[in-house]
Length: 182
Image (tube, rainbow, N blue to C red):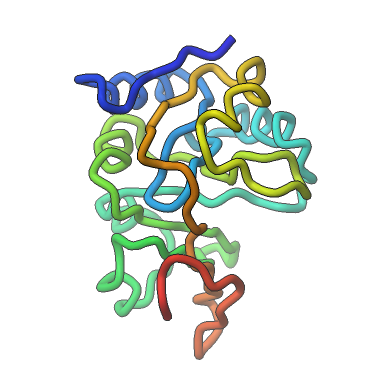
């Protein structure tokens, strides 16, 4: 059974950051919708693929702080650096020719978590091909036995996913219109 953490509880962001750093995976409210998350590692990626029943051909979004993004090998256009933090996910290239979906969340709670955990994978809370679960009461019965923790935030009960763009193309290509207006 998952540990339930009340977002409003003092120190909850720090507790979540420490759990993620310890290799745990869980469900956290993001700047858009709830996300199924774990620190960036091969083990966590494997576990998230298994939990979601997702094909490995589909990668995850990586949530990062501005400082982690600046220190990364990702090639980030200047105008994106000025837009973040925002509910905007961008596919970016790196110096090795690989691509990565990245977002710098516009949410102080997530930013505190990222300050402890470093970059984390995030994906919608659902099984692959099914609709996203948007409220704690819908998530708990489905994911309680699959994750290590779930953060309860009564203010999150719907929402819109982030806007997704391909920033490797010029002009950028909007792949999914979401909460950020391009």
